[in-house]
Length: 134
Image (cartoon, rainbow, N blue to C red; front, side, top):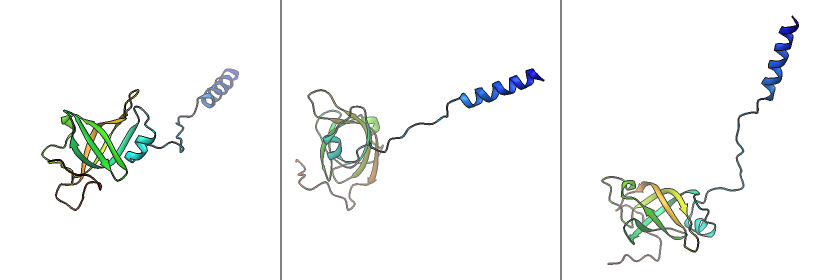
């Protein structure tokens, strides 16, 4: 009987000593959702989702992306472009990727996902002030 009470008391102590499973979620710091917010406070390796237009290609995997708040360079591997869907400056896209901030350089977004929100030829237009080079 004493052993049984001792074992039950021990189980109660062990059961209540296990830390609860949970995770703190801060409401103070949210991921930026605009180019302006990324440029104002670039945090290396932070994930972002931005909606806007891919304006032009500047090198092999580098492009200029813009929303209504500004422009930023993005790095997109060919495998992340949607297969069979043409993308031009009038195509509204949503990009998801990590901010890449190197010392003494402008931040970029290393894109890992592109979703076409509104295909080319619909009523979306690139941000004002953009002139497509010929």
